[in-house]
Structure formats: C-alpha cells, structure tokens
Amino acid sequence: MGIDWERELDRAIAPGGDRPPSDFVAPGRRALRRRRTAVSAASAAAVAVVVGLGSLVGGSAGLVGEPPAGIGVAEDPSQGPSEGGTVDRVEDGPTRGGAADLRMSCRMWDAEPHPARYDGRGTLCLAEGAEVLERVPDPLGYGSAGKSVGLHLAVDGGEQFALATWRPDDRSQVSDRAAGELSDWLPAQVAAQRDRDVDAAAEGWVSLTDDGEMVAGPGVDLVELVEVDLGPGFAPDGVSSWAAELRVDGVRELVLLRNLADGTEVVRQSGDFATFEAFVADAEERYPEIGGSW
Amino acid sequence: MRKADREAEYVDFVAARQAHLRRIARGVCRDHHQAEDVLQNALVKLYVAWPRVRLENAEAYTRRIIVRAHLDEVRRPFRSREVVGLDGHDRGAPEGASYEDRSALTEALRALPEMQRKVVVLRHWVGLSTKETAADLGIAEGTVKSYCSRALTRLEVALAATS
Image (tube, each protein chain N blue to C red):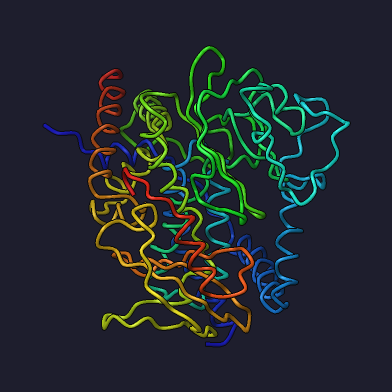
C-alpha cells in the first residue's frame, strides 16, 4: 500500500502558535509608507533612495549582516568602502590572486553556509581557500542594474557550484555540491532567481484580460507596450512576454511582463534609460538564451 | 473601500489563515526562525498589496511569496540552530506519530534540496496539482514531477529507517 504523504507530512510539519495580526499590520504600514515615499519622489530622487538603501543593507551602517565583533570577520581595514557599490573583485582575476585576496575587501563569516556571496556594497566574497575553477559572468543579465555570477569552486576539499546575485536593495546566494557541469546546474538556478526577482509590490500593475488586452491597474497608466522575445531564460515556449513603460502614481516604471497560467507576472526593472526603445534593446541583449528548465 | 475597512479585512484574513500559512513556511524552510522571517515578509507584502489583491486570491498570493522567498538570503548569519519544541510555539506531534517518526521525516524534509522540499510540500501537503505547483514555483511541470519523484524517494528511505 502506498504511503499517505499528506498524513505523514502533516505529522512532520509542526504547527505553530498564532501571532496577533497587529504584528504584521504595523510593519505593513511602515512598508506602505516607504513605498509611497519612494513613488512620490521624482525619478532621479527615487534612484538615489534605492542606491542609499543598497548601501545600508549589509553595508557599513550594519543594519543587515553586520557580524558581531570578533567573530570570523576577514576584512582588510585598509580597504575603504567601495564607491557606488560596484567593485567586483573577481574582475581582478580570481585565478591570479586566489580567493584569499577576494576576501580582503569584504566580510565572510565562519558560519557562512555558501562559498560565495556579494556583500552589501556589491563586492564578491569567497570562502577562505576557495579556488575558482569556472566562472560565468552575469548569468542573470542584470547589466548595470546589478551583479550576478555563476561559479564552480574548489573549497574544503570538495567542489561546489554557486550562484550569487546583488542588486542595490537585494542580494541572494545559492550553492550546491558540484555534480556534472556548471552549465547544466546554472540555468535552473538562474530561472529560479529570476522568479524571486519578481517584485510583489508590482503585481497587479498590469494584467492581460481574457480578451488578450493588456490593461493597467488602479493608479497605473500604460505608456508604452511592446511584445518581446527574450528567449527561454525569461519565458518558455508558448508564454508571451512584453516590455512596458508605466506611470505608477506618476512615477515612471519600466517592467517586463510574462503571461503565466495564473496571471500576468510583472518583473520590475531598474536602470536609467533615456527612451523606452533603449530599455527594450537592453533587455533583449541582457536576457541570454539559456537552456534547461525555465 | 475605506482604509479602515481594508485593514479590517486584512486582519480577518491573517487571523483566519495565519496558522496554515505558517505551516507552509515551516514546510518549505529549513528551520522555524527562517520560516517566521519568510512568513513575516510575505504578510507585510500582502498588506502593501492588499488593495490590489482580491480576498479570494489572498492566500494563493501569500503562499506564492512564501515559496518564492529568498531562502538562502543571509539575514541572520549567526542564528543558532533550531531545537524543535523549545521555541514556545510547538504543540508537539499529533496523536499517533511517535517522536522518532516525526523527527526522522522532519529531518529528511529539511535535508531535501530547497526546490524538492517546496515541490513536495505544495504537491503532497497543500494539495496543489502538478500544474498549480509549477505555476507557484515558476518551473516546468516536468521539473515538478522530477523533483517530486526524487524527494519522495528520499523521504521513503527516511520513513523506512524508522519502521
């Protein structure tokens, strides 16, 4: 007889006590205020806010990721903060200088579960002793909007695949024991990361009706819309995708859209583009043709 | 709808569905602290999006944020390892499940790769179809089936070891 997985999992997944809804309402109000503040500013000012936030996250202000004093911090005090958060030490040649040099300009904790990550300023950090065997630059295709790197590393006597990403207000890292080729492992991770990049706040800005018409949500003006083919890295065969310029509460937003079974997914884009055409051209160039599962 | 009414609707939803959403978060996360972070983040995002999210879609919307969360984001690098049952919230195993059974399957679930864990929780605990699971996770249906098969094989081994 087969295993009743629902029953077994119901036993395995522990229930937890409820918290009062006010625990979520108060931070929700703060988040809403932050969002309104951001969207009510002029575009240039909004960009500055995002950059400022990026410098706070994991940066010297230490709001996120500041390790307690004296615990496993590998940082060269002679290195000042990197201007604009755009220093990528891998560009200096990991195969030349080795991982130890990379660590000198960023923070890596002893308890770090992943062998590679970006710090809050966008500096790539590798675990101590890690050797880069293979590197795929910017597999997410962030371009000037952020950083990403796929790595095949030799570390701690074994080999690992890793993907690290950084954007001004967001970063993530994932790793796995290396098995097979990095080129086989990476596409699924890139696809998963792209989905994580979806900004929940942007959901509902635009949606496709059953009649095939793209309509804007409340407070949103659809300024430009063009169907694009960004390859399987953005949308699998049969899934249509668009680039759009919107005005959300009066602020210009550039988005990419894909029409999934359960609705239109809005992927907010950052970057400064003088024209909508320049944005589309950049997106078509940035999203590489990647195979594997989307 | 007035702001006060919207907020009251949100509060009602959180009160009614928080426990279920927390269990989804606990199912897809490696530890309960991470699950609390993910749930908190999801419900805050839901609050922001509430004017645009219809009540009937709120649960699916929140679930999607939970399962697409940055589980590998390093927010608490020195977070201590969780000790099951000591966080003041666990009610203990349901009647009929021995501690060993539950612990073994719980550990096996946590040991699964992230996407396999998410797939098995969505398919076999939440009860989504393959298509719905694929849509929630943004992966192909074939990938869901593949992850699910591999995950269940590992979980079966864990269960067999306790019997």
